[in-house]
Amino acid sequence: MSTSSTWSLKFLFVFASTAWAATYTVSETYVGQDFLNGFTVQNIPDPTNGRVNYVDAATAANDNLTFASSTNFVARADFTTVLNPSGPGRNSVRLMSNKQYGLGSVLVANLKHMPEGCGTWPAFWTVGNQGNDWPNSGEIDIIEGVNNVGTNQGTLHTSPDCTMPASRTETGTALQSDCNTAVNGNAGCGVSFNDPRSFGPTFNSNDGGWYAMELTDGFVKIWFWARGTSVPSDVSSDSSTIDTDNWGTPVAYFPNTSCSLSSHFGPQNIIINLTFCGDWAGAVYSSSGCPSTCVDYVNNNPADFENAYFDFISLTAYT
Image 1: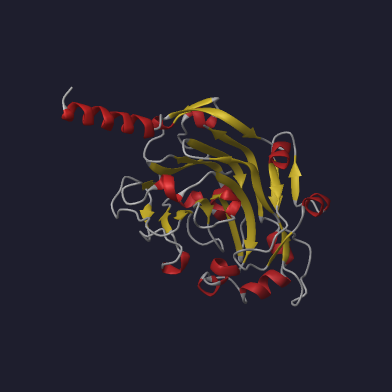
Image 2: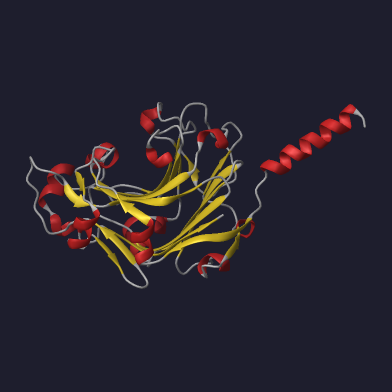
């Protein structure tokens, strides 16, 4: 066999060993009580310096900040308490999945409602190694935004040497290109969604929709389908198998062109959290059209956070 033939076979083997099929099979489905069984309620200080108090599981249950029915799971913030300015922040919840999902996995979330309101900063995202060595094992923000302003943003946050090309096949609008948390004030390499139904009050008034994220060593993709629009049948039906090749152009596409995803992203835990003010919502609050200051508003207007809740119909993980 010639040397060139040998190298050709080696190349084909390496390519085949790192390529991911677009067909996946269900690994876990979280509905109702499954969220409480499959996630840990994290009673921890807020890493983003928010005006929030992440309560433990018992407090969350007693105060109805987490609630599960046979068909839905709700996670919310307190909306009855005026806060002491020198005391802890508004009670809320942060949940982390007990299971991790690595390269060659897909998450599909069917949400009816997400938190809204001035001062709010809701997020549905993943982080490597339970966040213990952040950002070395990567972070993928699937749903994130603040203060009811604008549309959703999908973002990667990584250690150095991970950048995205300016031009790529996606329907969203690329923001920063460098995913490194140490530059651009930890903005990450984000993509702004163009559909106004992708976030906040407009998402909620449309009865929600579906978000999906695919993680491979070749790319990260994020899709959004508003309820009432054309949704792939395997997504809308919670199918036991899915084929992401049939899902069309993603809203956000992060290829491995100048970023080794296998070295920047370890197995990911899913995070669901709602904080207030802090490093992002607080920093842009004055330009968001919201009253007072962020902290004063969160302290003194509990009733305005009655709609600050997640309502998940389901969350399905595929591998």
